Image (cartoon, rainbow, N blue to C red; front, top):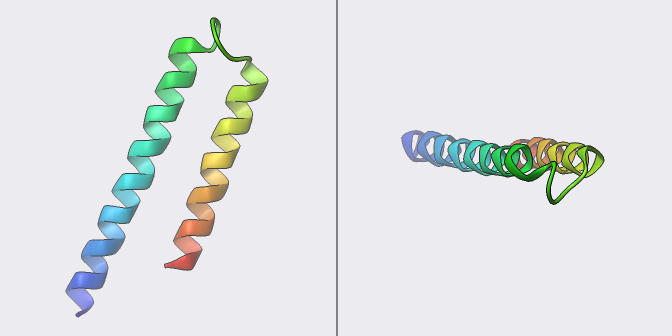
Length: 58
């Protein structure tokens, strides 16, 4: 059972990191065209907050 829980945690962390990386890349790529730096910062903070909350819920 312990192995399964550890595997689930690893997958969850990888998913969080992939989402964060994807949004960060999107923001970097389009920040000059579509969104302001302020919006980019808010998105990054939101992802960090979600990540923290998700980790605490595990």
